[in-house]
Image (cartoon, rainbow, N blue to C red; front, side, top):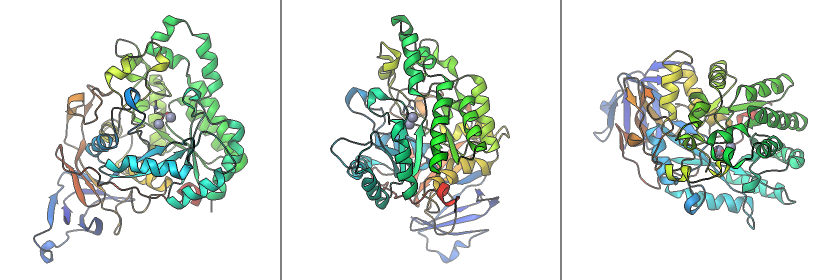
Length: 465
Ligand code: URP
Ligand code: ZN
Ligand code: ZN
């Protein structure tokens, strides 16, 4: 349906203005003060956004919906994960495709796109690479043509077969550079983790979720970022570090930037708003993810980095499990790793950074919409409010005071790590390609309406021209 959004405070690229937005056939057709709707048929819907902020739809650039199989599968599949996301004002998410034995990278990505076909909003994909072989460059060419332009590497997770051998980094970095594909990295030094794992390996230690944090210290993040960043400098490639969790991680990024590296940093709500104290007590297992939760000082350093511009994107790493799944393991290293976040993120960011004047609305728009769109090649179609772009719009109320509880969340996980957090703002209407998909707490979207969106070259490459 065509619509006009009136009376909202609209977050444009550089200003917040009271303008109206006309949406026709899924696209933004006009942005101007007082659009005269008398010339339109009665088919047009008027949405009164008085007292609300109108954002470009949020992009969750790091999700794991529909991960794994059977008992190990995440609580959320692509339908429930994307449905939870629209309650958080998300209109596009970016998930991951595995490198699968016996398949080309493109075949793996195509399979993942099919798996994601139940999504209620648009999505893009990043491609994981776990091992190198002679045909990788050709397979990368095929991926680029299909619009998958990000390669994700892991410096850890040997037990899952995800560890990518650093001896192959220079070649892969060069292959990425030649194709202007962005390298993203999960950075935790595996040697440190293995060593510490052996050191603290008594059966009793392993029972405790806090042990998981003990063997994955911030120093491991620091080392892995430095090593990857040095390769990026040598191969003259930009590098994107996912889920930066610590002050030491930030320090590594600063040192590399000083040495001339183009390093981009992402963090997640759990590293901003939760700390290691959550790992103690009976529910500790519910708060395990990789890297683990850190100290309050780390939360503060990351929050400051959001404001200073050192961190450019907040994504969620949404990877939800049920209480039962989280509490099943006898060794904390076997707890399925990850927590939810797609629905909670925008309310948390607004309530604990914008509402206390740490950042402003324009910065919130950059962190949640515009930067992910530009860095991952979805811009200008997504991530900003411009004439001609997709009408992906989040209407956000600054009046909505609520307490986050699992009962009111929409993930299939039966808990939220933010239980009891008081928030003072939340999305009230989410519009995806011109269609209202969430309104005042009711889902009104459709399973399968989301489409795969091919990505273009990352802005991090364009910056170098
Ligand atoms: O614990 C996490 N973060 N699980 C998801 C996989 C990853 O490393 O991002
Ligand atoms: Zn990761
Ligand atoms: Zn992840």
